[in-house]
Length: 278
Length: 170
Image 1 (tube, chains in turn cyan, yellow):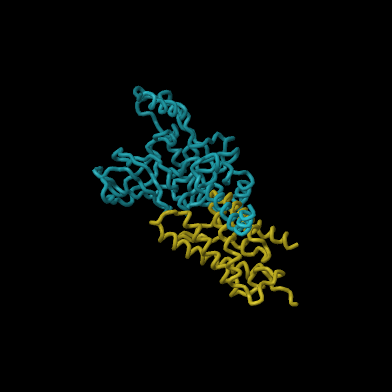
Image 2: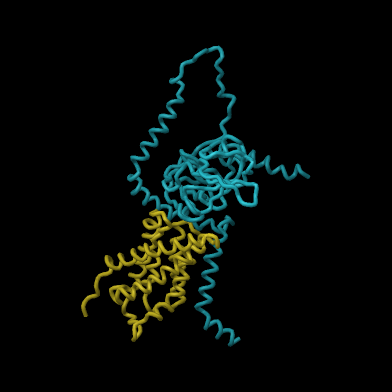
């Protein structure tokens, strides 16, 4: 016993070092296991409040840019106003309002903290459960897909950016309907990779890559980016496709959280697959 | 008095890291970090165990800002663990005067440069190693470590020049 205490005393420093490292690293490597990291991010209120202050100071720097962007979106929306159209033939026009059902709602939010330089990137937005944000909702900007909600507090949410190794967003090449998964290699925040597309499918540079809408996180056809580089993977009948992101993640400021009103129904139905197989 | 000064300094450096340096983006793998300075500047007579505990909390606070879940904490604890032996290796002939603080003004720029550059390189290398965690990314790890270390060292020196006044003549 005395030997043990003597040993512990001698290696006390190293033991404390080990314990603290294990503590830090276990939180780091359990990024995936949700409950343990729950309180460990910037949606915790004090930090989020400070980041909001910081944003309030710096947001004026980007006002010009944002105004131009807003004007563009406005112009586009105004083009859709009924008053801009004249009826061509009143007899055959179909009003299809009642045919469609609203499935996706968009919750506007502002990015208050973000990173893009790491292998796994997260950003914080100023919308939380109070505005109806929930885990696993898709997040898009005007340009395209930016991420999936990872954790929510009352007023804030942390979003797993598209620049995350295991983001796995389902995407299709817009002219072929071939689908694969979006992954991020951690090298260049302008590009992501599209994996799982068989190399007998014809693809050209510059073709759009859009969301597939599987899982119900995103509406179908939201742009992700364009094909920038195309290389066959050695020893596999697959393409290695580099996709240039539509939204430059380095200048991300205003986003929309996509709320799927029918998400519950999709989940319910897809859960049944396993049972139906038996 | 010194304790209060140190606590104040730690909080200031954490805020500087979280609100300013963590938000800047230079690209090319340059990530300047100021918060390791808080560990470098802790008093000479701090016990090794306490150094690590304090470093852990500093790193953890930075993690809160950066959404990095323990990455900064791990690197900070490593720096605090190595600090005593590195300080011992570079100690002056008649050991450190515990009344003095580990700043460039008190112990000279050459001492400060040697000590902090070693700690910075260790910190950044550990940080990016964990960040990438792939053998195939060794090139990125080395480039990021080198460039970020240089940027961090420049910031450390600037802070020394601007914020630490010359000790009053004795």
